[in-house]
Length: 348
View 1 (cartoon, rainbow, N blue to C red):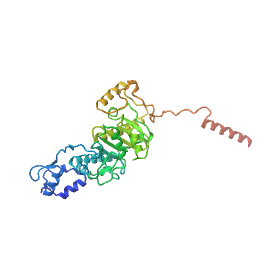
View 2 (view 1 turned 90 degrees about the vertical axis):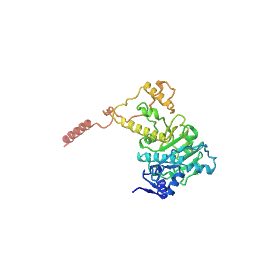
View 3 (view 1 turned 60 degrees about the vertical axis):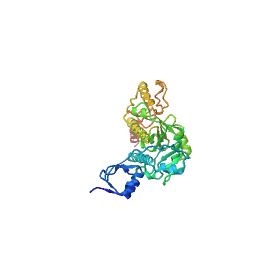
View 4 (view 1 turned 180 degrees about the vertical axis):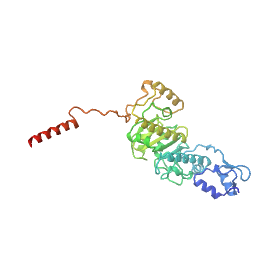
């Protein structure tokens, strides 16, 4: 028997964060369900029970700003185009949660959608279980324009990145444990080891400030001119992308895998093998061609590698000798004990 899908079924799918383009090919739509799909620009194929697929939604033809009318903003927020972006936010949130880059309701994500407005994730919701209807629309001052749930408390940091770095179209913040370990130590990971890290990430450390405050956002934003991934001291990591929100997330995967590899390397008992300056220069040329910032662009080869702050946890296999006359000497202690016993025996 073919599936019969009602308006109530479609509304439940939206609440659960499911894509309306994934309906069964043999589905039969009730009239109200078909009208619901048409309102959201989801086009059922000709004929009852035909395959249903959401058409590629176009971006708004009229640029939106925080000064746009409430009607225009709400129309955009409820459009098929905005729904696609909301689904992307949910997808990235699930990936962060599944990879254990976030815990509790931690982490937040944002996408720039106008001159001074952005879609963002809500506060107090696990990134692994968000739904499109949970998302929020805010202006660049953090004022919420649309959405029933309250926007993330850390949105000011994302917005300050977007204001300071015009190329930033999406931002992602989370707490991946290996990367956050470097952030707690206040260390930028060493360079010249793995190509993917050198090409796609450019990392710096921002000093700690209370999360969600303008001061925290400013310290991060001060670094985004030449870096696309910022370690937030005693907190976590935030990245931005000039491409899309998935690319911002990719920065997290690349950084976390790299930090984990570096820590494993440091336990192997020998100095890591590093790239030559000429090899690193080749990678930086690729990086520059991709439009990815890096403070090393334009430097001479001899200036590229600087890992002075990095101290791998490698210790010598032979323990150091005690200096003369210092510490406990078991042989001397035995000699003293023997002499003492001889003296006591003669006294008896």
